[in-house]
Length: 629
Image 1: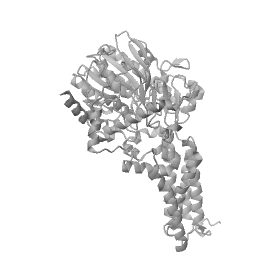
Image 2 (image 1 turned 45 degrees about the vertical axis):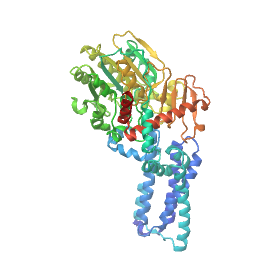
Image 3 (image 1 turned 90 degrees about the horizontal axis):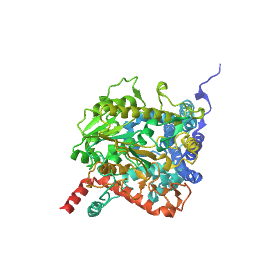
Image 4 (image 1 turned 180 degrees about the horizontal axis):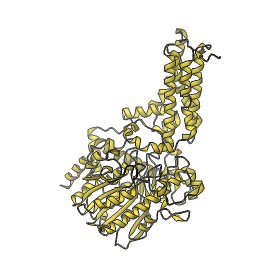
């Protein structure tokens, strides 16, 4: 009988195992770069070698007693970090920041979505960890710790590598994406931690400078125009704002397999409505909650933190607070737990007095929940029951949820038959879930009519953010084929905005470029409310001559869209390496035509961040009141 006790085998030198781990880790890094870096892969790979070398050379200095455990832990951590980076990038389109740890409470609700983007090749990052652990545990290892003379040489080598590793951190002038593309994954993580801990990317001002900033911001002349179009057309009416989960504009008035994808939204557009077809998302890491924040305050979200989590204590002069002053009751409806995205703490600060969440609806846990919460059919139906009892006039945000990634639907609820090539794809699931959510919305409108609420209300509907980001699975390829042209960021960030005014006989398509930051001033104009206190970055879309949308988070900061052109800032942080094209013809244009818009985008974003970080809205209003007196 063979003796399978590996402890009797000839000891293997630990330096060979360390060399294997080193080479394997380099291959993992190269795989990550192939999936995540558009250009300069070789440069990023070469600049990563000192970091990997530094990590594994340190193992030669460990004592023989501890070398097995330490080597295993180091190698496992490297593999897990690379695996997490790759999966996160494939889901979100960018690398994780340490600030994402602040959202750990929201992670369980999106695990299913993340699992959907996994591919077998991703597991190459961690496939060797368990075999390596078993091998190290059962095999005799010969490890000669470095002698003094050799140790001195190693210390010198390690010092040089450490300088090569850390020096870029001190001299990087771009953002974390620039750090990744030019110095590699590990420098990215160190630089990310460095910028967060030192607030390197935050603007720090002396008290006097901050006071001057407040004074300048109090002079905002936006939205002070008189004789405005559609001013007061919805005065005194209920305001129902539907934030439709993951709804993109390409779906409007489009057929698939001979059937309309969104027949009820198309019907809404066709009568008593103004349709904005060049409207864009402006969310940050808070996604749906950021869409709510931007709409409510006309401020921009951050590019590294959820506002609902991190700035919940700030003072905001929100749309809801202004409407309350005019006698409106305020509501928000959502089919998930009240704690999700910290809504239960943030809503009172926004002036939302009545929050109806999953706990307040009637449902069967096994039958009525889809994806992240209550199915849209029951959600919309029961929402009307609450609204008919609400004090009039009311303002209500109604946030749908069924059409959330990964868009899995119960078979019995699917009515849109897929082509064979779209079966078992995110794209296929997406259009089926949107088709179902559209049906639920149609029932919502019919019940509003039945309960006598429709004619006395204005219904405003918009998508919160994209559903098909091109970095996830094969979305980019499928969508480019489906549309017949390249699926770029101005396409996937394009969400519909529909303003339905029952009984108005208005049917209009407004071509101006706008974003979620424009909703607050636009709604106030429709309601006939003149209140310009505080600071707003949005514009009333009915009375603006030019459109402008600042984009960030899913694309590098500085990117923007206006009525004529699209500008995408380069990931390396260098303006000259960026891309720009004509918004209508999609033909390339000279990026110098975009410099003014780029500078405006950076300026507005920084000003908004200054307001959030220093809680300045109250100070701005105080300054404005001084000037008025």
